Length: 388
Length: 247
Image 1 (cartoon, rainbow over the protein chains, first blue to last red):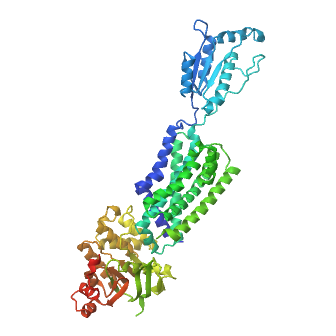
Image 2 (cartoon, rainbow over the protein chains, first blue to last red; image 1 turned 180 degrees about the horizontal axis):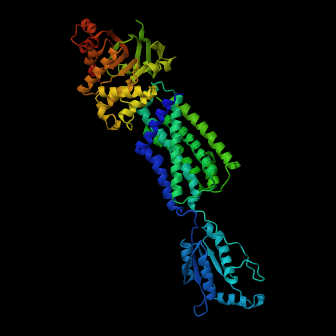
Image 3 (tube, helix red, strand yellow; image 1 turned 120 degrees about the horizontal axis):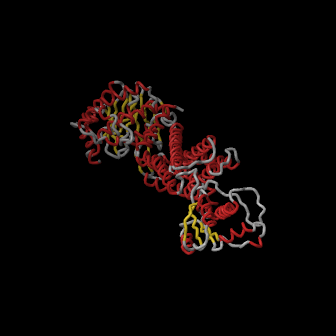
């Protein structure tokens, strides 16, 4: 293999990427914009900080009474980092806002809240003297955070309100469990989506490769190269190298853009390196699909349409889009290579799985095998039927 | 003198159409051979078969002493091919297109640079060398198309209608360039349907019609044989029709 020839062809392809608006958009600008828009739209901005949740508080304690316990309780709730308190004068309005998703939870402080708290301190060791009451808590069933975390937060705040900031066990008959206050970083939707974005961006290489091959074929450029001493191996190697370089730039841009909007994946430099290698291997799969498309397509216009036969299943079943699909669709997704890229990146970036974990190794093996086979099939088909 | 190009009983069929029918041809080293005929006569098919792009239905071809079917790689090192339609990358500049093909022929960097400068100068393209090809006029594209074929200074050049659709000034520049190649001992096959071009440049002419070689001689002897004042009259004498009517 002659390096001068391969290098010249790679340079030519990279110039095409930079100079042809369609290629530049699909490979570089589109993934970067997509990441930015998703980051802005799904809450990655300010990543690493707690996301706040709007909590409605309905205070039924009559204003004529002493409200010091109520104020203390609401004040403590306000100090919880992830909560933003909004007061309501009546439960109906709070319920209405809860149904519309304007708040994640509604807490109704009962009329006898003050008496109940006072009764405890008057006879902390005599439950028969207590005035029992119920703090009603309503949560948004559509919010993972609200269903899992609001009640423990409220319970902890109540304990803090009554006992103060002491964690030592108290000899008290009050039967309130003492769950730890959940103040873990909330995972934004973007963080669920981000691993799939890398696969999503790479998938479109299929269309660009198919278009460039069919355009070159239409313009007689493949024939022209074919009458030079350039071998098929040199030509295909140049394609692999230039498209892997494109995929590298694309992955780096998606990562930088995601990082810029607050995305902070788990893992270290090794995790990033493995993720990067995985994306590069996956780009070979898309080169293969691009060659198969170019073989089937008679024109560059047809190539765009046929490319979507490979793009759509990978996009809908194997990237971030797939997480919203039915269980059956997700099962079918296991037959597309992008599924394994997204799965591995999710394990690495979101779950913090070590690079040597069985899941990562399995995904890497599947992506490598499928990419090798697809690329080989693409090269053989194109060589036999696609150059004419 | 040994034949640089030898074609024996070349036949190429596309389904039920016979594009080339039993062609025999021998071209000597340093000869400028014109393949003349109307559009669709089979000229381009012959060129494609000569450079290994088309597999003949039957027959054999040797270029530079190498069998085109069996030793295609060696043939490709000897030849330069200028296709009929401009085949160049519009997103590259004229210079970058030529550099690419020089590199595909593994030319040394310095020689490539020098050849590019000389060829762009000869083709009056120096000032536009760094403009994107997509911005070139049709004539400029065609001249670049020719430079791309010849930048590596091949021993054998296949020029498929290199001056078609060129303005007279550009055409004469290309003629001068082709004459210079011939003076340097290069073997050239030139296809054309311009009679005056064939007459001006070629040592020998093969007239091809419906895939068959119907005449083969020097321009002068062809004219003498048919008592014609030009090659157009020779073609009329041979076929009963004008060559350009076929276009």
